[in-house]
Image 1 (cartoon, rainbow, N blue to C red):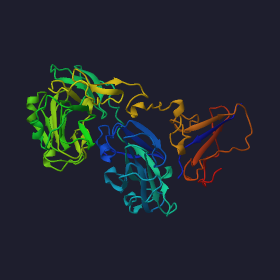
Image 2: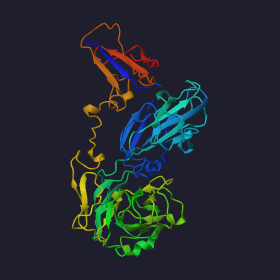
Image 3: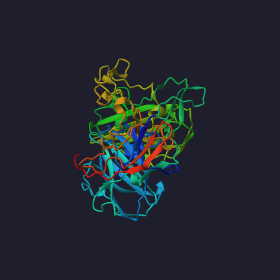
Image 4: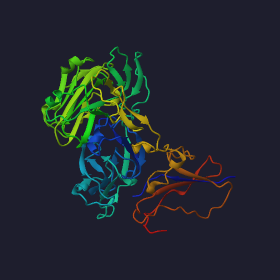
Length: 542
């Protein structure tokens, strides 16, 4: 007969618009959003995919995110905190680059307020670099649930976010990371939307190339006889140089406008991120916009200096005066309400319809930026969102043509030597991973559960299995577990399990382990107490 020892590590680590409720105890989800334009929280909130369609989701067992994960990304963690005894609690965060921690007065997300934050990087254990890192004392009642939200934005270099607290039921004058004993995940929320770009069926037989938009809408390409409707997903800005002045009229009166731009670049959105590279320039973008559902939409424009956005009542550019917003002076990239002219009223837009749009921008000196964002019938209207490129089409009837051989940016990370060809198109030479000029294009990600990725990427959690799987013991739910098949019947006099014991992090490692035994691999009996609680490590080197 066999005797099989099952060690089930429960991984109780030591120490918006949808309705949500308290979920699984001891764990929360880390949602990762790639391709931020900048390292500001506002850029995370503007992403079309936020929060409905994260690029990656990982499970956390304490309020500490993965570190050194990637560049230019944002992250969201939300859940509930509960304490075993009533008392005052202070919170503290460390992070790189920018982190915000919100806590509600109860279990309702609508009541969450910003408690502490950092607008620049800190050391991972530097709790006093900025006064804003630490919250005021907050009275929490025992066994009540308090909703929290952690937002993070990363540029380049290191990246992490950690949430600590001080309270009377731990050491009052020491910052402790909030561990699985005190956190719960989110339940009742709407399911995550399919990722943008995945094939789908929009139910319209007259459309082609139906794709998910990242917000649970399926959008197809409408057939049209308009030869000016060009490539889907292409947003291209033409630049005109050596134009003195900062007024939009200085662009219109330029001798080379609009037929002879000096250069141009593909844009990720209808957005030119803040730079301070050029002076005395103008930009023009033309194209067609579609919407994923029929409904009410509003538009806002930001820019430095004058920026004008026009939207036609249909695909005819002659009707572009139907809707317009503009920046009469200048704004920064997230300054949406400096001038009343920046924001337009809500208008009804119809699915499967092309609308011609045009953006004109004039910069005098200093920094330069422009952006058009919208509020939609399917997204949170508390902030403006970037317009997904998959809803936009290039304008193939523009007069602009740039001389062949002029260097440019085709917007594709996997090309080198981008330059304009004889057809006035910015094109590059495809490059192999490892040979591309763009460093991120040279990154080779591993399959999430490939053999070299079977464990978590953080040192303190690197004994986690990649995903939860069905437990051989039917008394347990899907979980992380280890099974030892001894191959025969033996008398076990003892067993040693080494826990994490780092000098700087005694709180790392597991706290609770369930052990059960079986002689046939089918019927299991808990071993003695069944669940064993491990004491906090002392931090000494074994």
